[in-house]
Length: 407
Image (cartoon, rainbow, N blue to C red; front, side, top):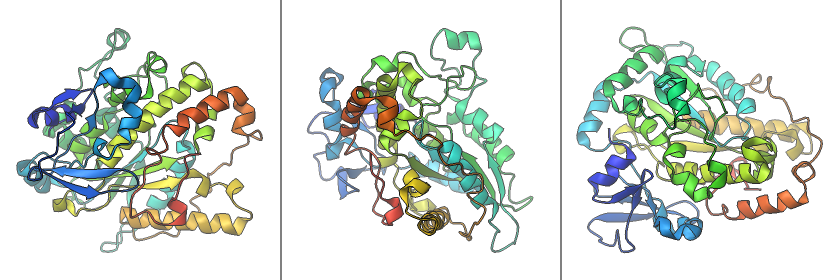
């Protein structure tokens, strides 16, 4: 599997921070590339090999990077494998009984509330052919060891700086297949659907031992664009490009994107990163990073069915404060569960117990009251720069429950 840097080298472009540096006239040859209209203000593009990279402008014009990112040429489609040989290898070893779901979102996107919901929904599923119940694991230790690679470096090595000793693990098909043997036993021995749910946020936590690349103290002093293209952010808590390229040929990898209104998201951890304004800068950087990944990974390759790779869940469509009565809330939640089951290919969407562990926020003060007027004003300025970037949108997500608002 090629990682983003290798893909950039193979296309003859210079790579910066895992993304591709191109001149203004790059992509002008009609026989080299195909342009297709994509969701919202963005366009997506395939290159000749079905592979694509993320373009970014020169770092010398860093103050213009956010506005340039809104340019349609800034995000292009990218398939999960680099060539037909990789595709053949994936088909040969593909586990039809293995589904890996990453609940994807920035810090403060109510992962703690949503993870029990999707786990409960998965546990209600019965295979329509065999009648066996899905085997569901939330946070599988072996998958986490593979994608977060926490044991690859010692604490002393991490203290000295970003540790890259485990960088090649996910690039090794033998290592990936060995991991799959642990999380999804070979269906030729015992056929049972295995669903692995992961949900560590971006960024994630402050524990030095938990991730190969840990949360960095210099992020609050950078611009959001600088964060989004930095090697440390691209590899924290995992490298999404390497994770998808490594595991998607062998398992059904899907993403459920969580979105929460921006001010509520920042107000949930106002003391992280040195205060709400600096925390907002860090979150904005990871929002750009996630958006670029999602916009370049819209569909699975044709040989795996060409299905959508992600859908979105709007947090305010699940909370009682958004509705006038219990019936409206229940109807909204049922519809969310319905489109999630359909997206994930699960036969059952009815789940009366799915929200049994859901806990509504006990905070009575609004984000404005908690953060203060001055800080809120600066956070709103940050949010305005993200209006064409987040939340991500796709044409298939047409239900009212899927129309998230940034604020």
